[in-house]
Image (cartoon, rainbow, N blue to C red; front, side, top):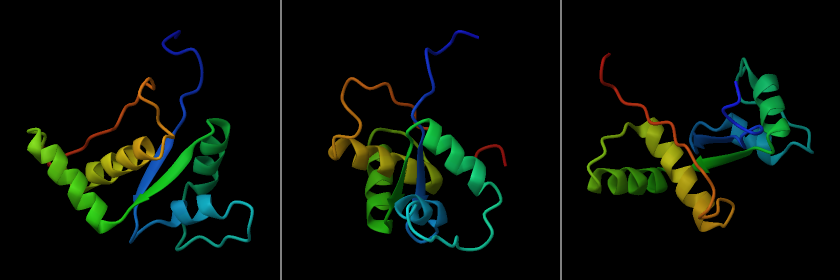
Length: 113
């Protein structure tokens, strides 16, 4: 469709208390056994590899801080978006995401349920 020049770099974010993909990402070169039976893990790993993707986790404290930051700007976000926002903040602070990078964070809420 000509909307983008290439494949976007994917970033997946998971809460630290439920993070089988994050654990998988951190141990790609080791013998990994996923927690439970993640249905799409092979497809997700493939997409991460071809996009030079990253997986980050959000601890509870980080999640609450990110949600409070969003709330202070007038945004209402659910905990899922708080996990994504936490990952964004961590990747900016670590220098992985640069100030000139174009970034999209998917925001969800409970409206309409």
